[in-house]
Image (spheres, helix red, strand yellow):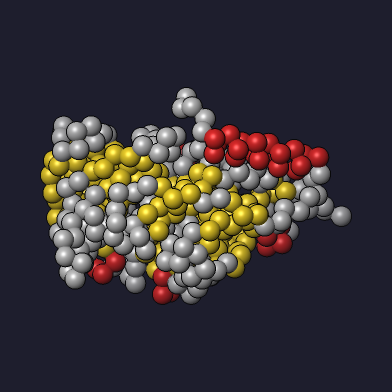
Length: 389
């Protein structure tokens, strides 16, 4: 275990104090509280078009594609040590902006990064940092995700209204081959995977719809209304079965995966929203507003006795269950969002991810830096079940 820093020790004490307050007074209302933001020492001195921040729980690293720098940064949250992966297009002349690394996924000891300039997937060996191969994509790529159930890479190509699928061979080093596309009219925007249910989700932002894709068959099996004027990033609570959608206009929507995407609850916050992250340990949702320069921390509260997700292969991916007794009123009582507090970031800071140590990572494209925020709020996720009387 990594040695505890002064910041982590302080955060742990705050967590214990707040947990004690909650235990001693179940009806205590949490007031908004400002968490400390720290700047991570990134080696970039230029504005960076940050977009897709992710965290890999197997690698235990925050993955930060750094656009114009031509690099991907891998950060260890326990000590903030950084590994820089090169091999992407780099901006040389500020008058001629070039976005290289824009998104990345990790699997089997290799990093697969999108290069916007060359419209390709760069395969790089993690242990050495050596580039292995460059595989062209059909159109301008935006997001890349590794699908563990099929051993594939999925790349969103919004300008062509499709997701391009690449097989990853068992060779060492692996070879990529484009095998098919999934058509997403008026999309796809963002891409999130629910491994438990074998589902992928992507948005049609201008139609207020979220498409549900069965990963094994590559089939769009449903289109759910998401309540957004412009749906952007998503996160998923696989254990409870909730899909969390950020609406650009300033709204956060929670949808029930097990009940046809029923909109369980929503909250308004800020504006110019783009990305959202979720901490399954604390059941906290992180939502940066690039208009206000704040990131909000919400508690996703669930009612006691809510249905548990199924892991039965014969029912996967089951996306439609019977509405519980009481109809929509019963469903509305199952979950809610409570604003715990905020942390300062910066205007234009829109991308976010969360690690397994209860840290929040938010981009600061203005100077190519990154904000690090430790979430010291306790888990208050279970709310009392509504009385039947």
